[in-house]
Structures are given as structure tokens and as C-alpha cells.
Amino acid sequence: MSDQQTKCGVVAVIGAPNAGKSTLVNQLVGQKVAITSAKAQTTRARLLGIALQEEVQIILVDTPGIFAPRRKLDRAMVTSAWEGTEDADAIILLVDPIKQRRHEMIPLVEALAKRPERKMLVLNKVDKAVKEPLLALAQELNDMLAFEETYFVSALTGDGVAELKSHLSSLMPAGPWHYPEDQVSDASERLLATEITREQLYLQLHEELPYDSAVRPESYTQRKDGSVEIRQQIVVGRESQKPIVLGKGGQRIKAIGEAARKELSEVLGQKVHLFLHVKVDENWAEDKEIFEEIGLDY
Image 1 (tube, rainbow, N blue to C red):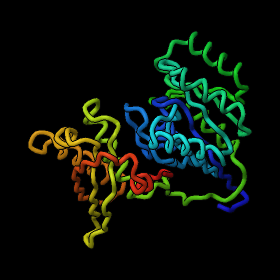
Image 2 (image 1 turned 30 degrees about the vertical axis):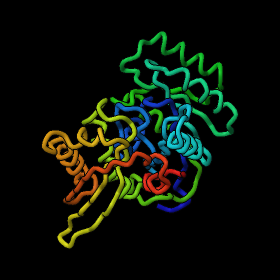
Image 3 (image 1 turned 120 degrees about the vertical axis):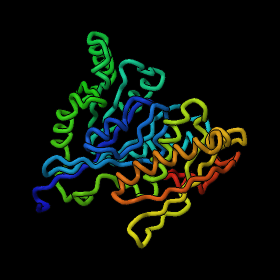
Image 4 (image 1 turned 90 degrees about the vertical axis):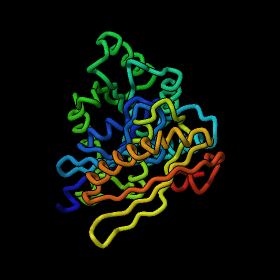
């Protein structure tokens, strides 16, 4: 494919926490690249998905949910989100019409109004939302900001996503592809591996474990037999949280490790040996090194 034919651009996906950004990115790419979880604020690093449509490569910046920051960790995530939109050829504002989270959505619309990029409004969850209030919300948001296009999709079922993808393709500027054809994410395998483990932490512990936990990469070693050995540290903020992660007789951490290992084997296409251990560090959220490891600016 010559450079004359190819097009390549960046689309930033922003929205209130839990609007379904990661699920939408996965649908556009056609496979799982971004961590998805029912717990808000799980995307910390600016993970990219790379979607292909014929001669067009669309680099999707999956920004962290933008919300009012309280702690240093929150501030870093919000900074990271806005930075993710700076070089974008288009910005998608993704809205959950059911939960709405107006206190977070409206400031986003106001902030977007001041930005020069082309803006798309995408209302998610059309498979569950009632039609009249959905249309009224779309009208209200378009009155606040003149979006170029409005799309109604279901990130979960994929309904409406093909039309959105076609339109995004048409907006991308001519130029060489930034990534090889077979690459869907620029997250290094090491970071992707920690994201997958962290997703399992959320899925299996739900409300028991607060958001104050991190998964740190310790080592990532390719073995001679073609398998990979991955060692990770699960960091929690309090001593009382350690037994929650371990579970009775170590059963919980074993289940988390097993599920993460299985998914990692599929994603990496090789056998994985995963070793997890839990560390208590009350001040981890102020630790510069941990921030850098999970892809954020301190």
C-alpha cells in the first residue's frame, strides 16, 4: 500500500466516567485492546486502539474519564485525558443517556466548545434507552455546542458503530500509517499485562476492594521454550485489604491470576506463567515511580 493511498489520523474518545469509552474503542478496533470494567475510572493510561478501514488507519486515544480531581492520582488522570485530545483530528464525546452524570458531562461540553478540533456527539446504549428522552438529550447538547455529527450507537452490541467508523475514516488526513497493519495497540505488552490483571482485580473484588489499588510490573521474561514469565505486584493502601485480595487460603489471588493468565495467553499468543504477590504501601498514590509505571505523568 503506497503512502499516496493511505490515510491516518487520531480520534480522542472522551466522556464522563463509565460512559462506555473502552467498550466503544474495542468495537471500533474489532477486538479487545482497552480495559473494560463496570467500575468507574479504570482507564489510567492513555491506551490506544488502532482501527483499520480499508486504506485508513484510525488511532483511537482512549482517555481516562474526565472528572473533578481530588487527589494527585486523579489530577494526573485528568491531565492525561486532556493531553490525549490535543493532537486529535476529531474528538468523540461519548454520553450515557441513561446515567447521564450531568455534573460531569456538562463541564465537558463547555470545555469542548472552546476547542478547535472537529467534534462528534455519540450517544451510547441505544439498545436500552427510551427514544424520546434520547432525542431530547441530543438536541439539548447540540444547542450547547454545534457538533458536526450526532450518532446513536450501542457500544455493547455494536449497533451503529460501523456508520460511525466510516465517518471517522472520511475525516482522517492523507499520510502514511503510523503503525504496522497487524498492531492493534501501542501499549507495551508489559503495561497491557498489568491492565489485564487489574481488570480481573476489579471484576472479582467489585465493592470489597476500593479503587486505591495498583498492579505494578516487576519482570517480563521470554523463556527459551517460547513461553513468557510475568511477575507482578498488587499494591493496596491498607493492611486490612491484603486478606481481601488473597482470599481464604489464597483462593482469591489464585482465581485472579488464573483468569488473567488465560486472557494474557490469548492476547499475547503464547503460553504465560503469571506470578502475583500483594504488597501494602499506604502512600502508593503519591509515588512517582508507580505513576510512571502505569503510564501517567506525576
